[in-house]
Length: 183
Image (cartoon, rainbow, N blue to C red; front, top):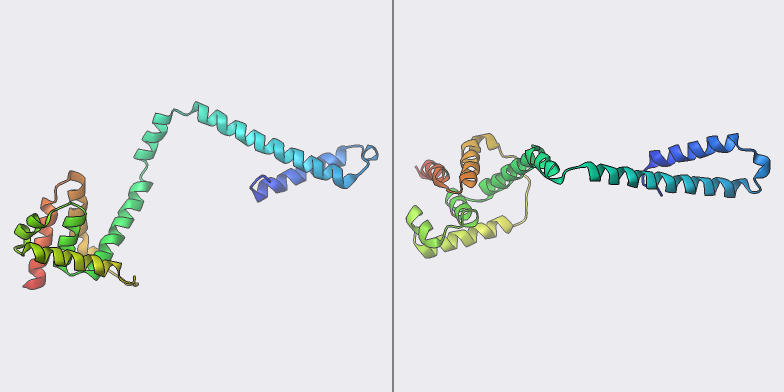
């Protein structure tokens, strides 16, 4: 009834202690009395929690609460972990050119003409590489161990590009990785 095992135990214990102090000769049915007493104490407990919550919410300035949430680092940590994991999957499943085209198309909304110029590939070829990359990413997931420390610069340049809204450093990192792969 109260949603917490420890609160329920406390309520039962308090009820029992009160019952020990009551003149039990005046009680006709001990079981019914104890059930009703526990029920009433549980309702009182729930109402007390509601009052405390309402008082707390009345005293909170919502803009302060939003600011505290924004300043709080936990959402940023979660985002950082999710981003690292997503890029790790992309690194594991896709070839460097597929990674580059997929990320620039999906994240930075590059069109095929821009990708054509950037990678010196035909527009249709870029479209095919993108489709192939998308297909590979939807294949059955698998477990793997990837040392993301090897790709720290890649991750950092991606995050920075997302932050500033322009992928110049990220494109340079992609080109460097492609040149290492094909040299």
